[in-house]
Image (cartoon, rainbow, N blue to C red; front, side, top):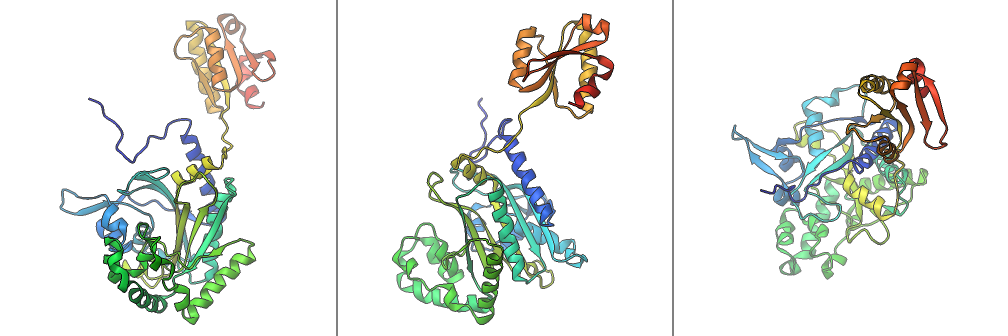
Length: 421
């Protein structure tokens, strides 16, 4: 019987996993500079967390969630995104009562969505995201946008652009919603079934439809920017002024709406420009979600965040031919000749590792020539050879693989000697 990996998942093997580790470390270091702290939430939640937090009208809730009933007859769902879980935890753990506000969090972990697998998109994928909870200051919006851009630029991506829009406050969205319904009603029969259902429940989502994006009614749809009230206009202008002050280039796209129900005011996406990345150029996105904390029974708390798929990020790096600076070097490859010597070599290897060195030895009883070849494959900086004669004299041969220089080193100072080089 052949057992294969489930569709839409992947094994991340040695040689590739180091790229993931590099990106994750880079993201963590960047968050530390911006004073965001890591949070880890369960990989599954009560289904209501996502139906309430993400929105009943979204594709995620309606079509893509992995939901199951446990033995206690409770409906549970593998998390499809990060924000709803973070907000649930924020309310449940009363983080709004912490003295340091806003609460600035980041997360890295697997998410699950049942959707058609394609390049850079999987049914199990790893998402990195940040959430800033507790501030209505438009400068926090700009900070989130700056951090997300810094991540891509810091990893070497150059052909990216930041696209922003405003969805306005509740009053602005209500006026725009009415205008959208009136606009699409005459042609609703020409739109896909999803859009026909969305027109009454969430007409903003019609603008985000992938099937009908070329329909003439999309291009002529009323822009949210035409319906922003004075407060929303001022907020959006302030966000733009902060970006300008940081010399961060951006474009305003009135048709950018994002796909989740909880967004208001600022929304944004970072896109990769250039060929070879496929038809979907979005790398990441996010926005402001005032009102979501109240949905979970918490106090009136504004929020702002974004998320990205590490798989999409890796694909973008590959598309632009960017090699991450991942060191492949080993410090010492130890060759032991003779059964009695192997016991001493095992102890010596352990001491080298305790000293913080990356070390390896042969475990297959290969001849010395084959062991030197193994050292080359590991890109070892030094090869140390210990035979019975050397052991009797209390020394070990050390060869610098780059220069070819060989020297004898006393065994009792060997670990200290190699550590200092």
